[in-house]
Image (cartoon, rainbow, N blue to C red; front, side):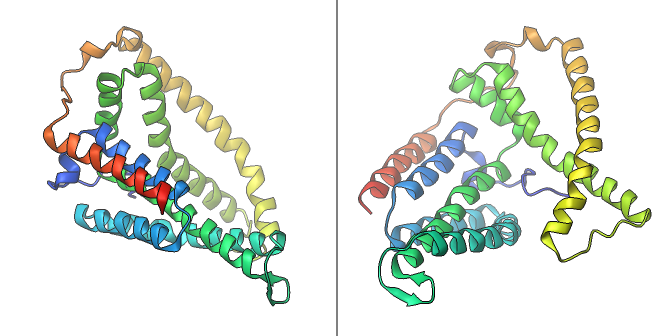
Length: 248
């Protein structure tokens, strides 16, 4: 089963960029999303993200993520409508300022989550860790911890599904529509998942130590990650995006 953060092979310019450059591009879109205050800028940044995803062939990943983000965005919109009381009353408890604030929060939620998934889908996690160590001088243990945590996301998801199937075979009904009842059923699953994750983490730590993890340095990597002309051009575009976000 493929995860939304799994690497998608390709030969596009986005795939060939330095992993640090792709991470900087995602960060620039996220920062510009936080700085922008107009609908045109927020929608434009979302359109840019989907255009890059379509170019890299990972638009399907972003569409899958929307199934999770859109309901969360609706919840955030409702919270803004309830707590933001400024402006004129549109209907009931809905005000104009609440609508504006809630809709912008929803757009910012999408603009923050999607660029990072785009960067991860076009980058191998091993290359991302090694490039951060070589280019950004990040200690290898921190880069390894970050990429390993990302690798654990689909593993824990599969383990959670297996535990739920085992409990469903014992008569537990997880298909209830009541969100509070579903949350009550999910909480006991955290204990076996935590026990499994601790055991898996201990095994990985032991295997890494036996392979000389603490001897790893910047010079230990066989592959090098120099910044090319295209990388500098994209980094310049990142600076332009952030500058536009401050004035939009």
